[in-house]
Image (cartoon, rainbow, N blue to C red; front, side, top):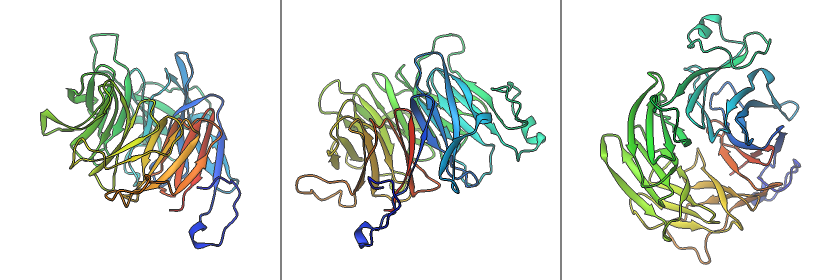
Length: 370
């Protein structure tokens, strides 16, 4: 991940990092964005619009390796109510399950992507909710499988700020809401497993740390960890030092679940925590020049994390020296400058050499050689 988009090779050992960047310009401002996980759909991503109106859009785009072009698939583009706050493909590397996509806005929605290679029998399994778009491109389309609404008796809802799909148990999705709750859904039964009042104020993000363990961050300034075997209790891992400072994002290290990272609203620093030592950050990453908007742990390495923010920078950090104090603070090992404030960042779990960022109406995928 260098600042150049050329494919030059520098022969010095330290710099032998191939810099490859592919860009897609969407017809609207991008907010939610994520990588597909399936092995048979390399370089596929979903992006969603941020439009100040009820109808918004979701597009499925794919990099064509031979041409270097990222292209949308018009038959898999669909309308979405409100701008999605997050979008995630089913964590199904081995392609054992239907090709599902989840989105959050007013409610959690599950969509089914139906591609050419599916037989009509596969398609019949879907709840017949009607096709989302009326393209005449044959069998290829996206259909809404379910709208998961916990407040059936009310037409009002606390918007879903974020959600996370449980990799160890893909029928479970956890959502966070401005109504102070976290809800664990069983998406196969389309029912709530558990709903907890998680915080004193709005819950802004949620992340799984295992089959039955999740954490959340809130406007109340705390990171809390919950174990579904003991729903009455939660552990406060961190509270922001200034009162009324919301925590807005949470990333849980998949390779080493002792570590998580969080972002303070309107702050240029990233706080890295060790859950064994609550309240005291292990390290604070302080090289951004403006608010940090997104964090992503490396899916294949326990000590690398990427951060991105309003300074248009995406920075990759090596935290292997986390325990020891570093004179003057830690510096990133790689930096990339985008064309505008970076609002979204995702590291591909099935292709860990690739990081995706979104800024304004652009999606970029960057090759990272750690």
